Amino acid sequence: MKVLFASSEMYPYSKSGGLGDVAHSLPLALREVCDITPVTPLYRFIDRKKFGLHSSGRVYMLKMGSKTYRYELIQAKESDTLFVYNDILCETEALYGYDNDGLRFGLFSRMVAEIAKKIQADIVHLNDWHTALAALFLKAESIKTVLTIHNLAYQGLFDKKVLKKLAIDKKYFTMESLEFYGKANFLKAGIAYSDRITTVSPSYAKEILTVRFGCGLDGFLTKHRRKLTGILNGIDTVCFDPEHDRALYANFSANHVGKKAANKKAYYKNLGVKERKKPLFIFIGRLVEQKGISVIAASLKDLSAEPLEFVMLGEGEAETEKKLSELSEKYGNIHYLKGYDEALSRQLYAAADFLLMPSLFEPCGLNQMIAARYGAVPIVHATGGLKDSVFEEKKKCIRGIVFESYSNKSCLHAVRRALALYGDEKACLKIAEFDMQCDVSFRKSAKAYMKLYKEMTA
Ligand code: ADP
Image 1 (cartoon, rainbow, N blue to C red):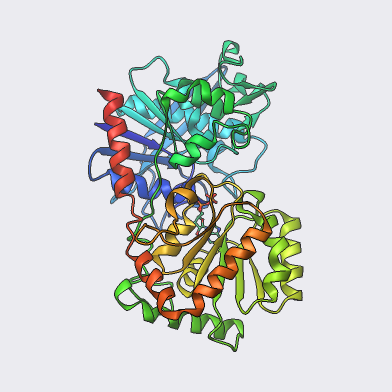
Image 2 (spheres, rainbow, N blue to C red):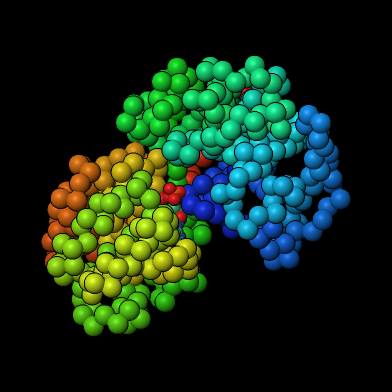
């Protein structure tokens, strides 16, 4: 079985969040069981030299309406990943956020559809709105398509003028197809035309059928619900491995979880914290409402009065960044680190006793899995993938602290329970040790995807 796996971002080449991680680790796990080719754009900021990506001479022309677009296919020597280079798509400083994103990713979706035909794929696995249009472009082909929704809040909404540029017939601008309140909705096209739809946790698959979490597409998804399944993500446990992670001050494993303490000690020294016994709580993520940022902001005053250190790493809305910077100036034990820093995030997971993840909604969430792997006990709001992966019950993976209602009161209560747990050093260490041994790899999810692929081609 031949699968083409398309994603707008792919670690280690490009990543803005969980999609980049998954687009790296899921094909890696699937490679064991099927013939899979990941495909992603070769953005200008990707270091061609470092990854051994040289011009291939495989240049193709894509005619769309009155225009012809040139693209090149490039492959690294020791990797199966296929890179697409087209100047409109790839000559940007960042991944997203440009006026012509509709054209950029519409083009990428067209190219993905062309590549699928060229390599005679049986299945094309699409991810999020950036590649969703390929389902429409492949509608008349025998190639099957599956669309994974990593976050329904991002749908790729554009002025309908983009359809002409992408040579998409006006007949598709209807409510049953890609029209959405007068705009073109790329994700909606994927929902309408892909053979199967998956989302990244079973709970989120149910939640997106409700008005509260459906982002305006709950009715449309309900119509297509027979195609929908939820498969929980995993992480690349080789890449996220505290025993060998070079970014850490001290490596450690579940068998020697005590060694983890050296990471906190080093980090506290760096931070100027004298009371080394204090528990370290961390938050890592995009500073958006989804991640529970208003609950965190509203809790900071109370948290500052507790015997803990709280470090937040992230970037996002300018106003939130400013507010967090001000509050971290005001409260000595609250620290806000602005930015996106992969190595620092790993050092934080290794140093932390607890990860705070009070997301308003969370399709899957990877941070709680990374935290478990690094022996930081997750504290989560019971929603989406967090509900499916963190449990209070003994012997259930991952063990953590779960709070039901989305409020700063519940969040604070959960933090205080964590502090009580921390008071019992042995019990706390036991949970960290247990979590480090939980199977958070992509093994189980890859099996579920393979089953789905088989059903699709049966
Ligand atoms: P998202 O909704 O952003 O995709 P996920 O939990 O699925 O959230 O994945 C987030 C990924 O991005 C994790 O690997 C996390 O460690 C990483 N990450 C998020 N923000 C930062 C940051 N500021 N610095 C480093 N890594 C980050």
